[in-house]
Length: 98
Image (cartoon, rainbow, N blue to C red; front, side, top):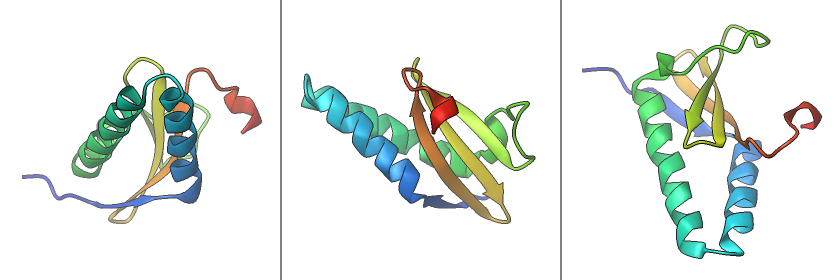
């Protein structure tokens, strides 16, 4: 059994999820709620299997990225026994300007 690390969701990540939810909820609140559930399940998976994400070539050693659905990415850092969810990004964003 894998040791589950403590999950910490940063304010920018909460804001990202809220913005994604609000945007999708304009058309379909059920779809928006289901997507948030998908994020939460993936957070749990990351906490259990922290090395399941990939390390982007441009990042520091503790940053990893996990793909969620087709157009979403979770950016997280592993530090000690903690997982810090840094951002929840959509492929529709200009991530260079974040």
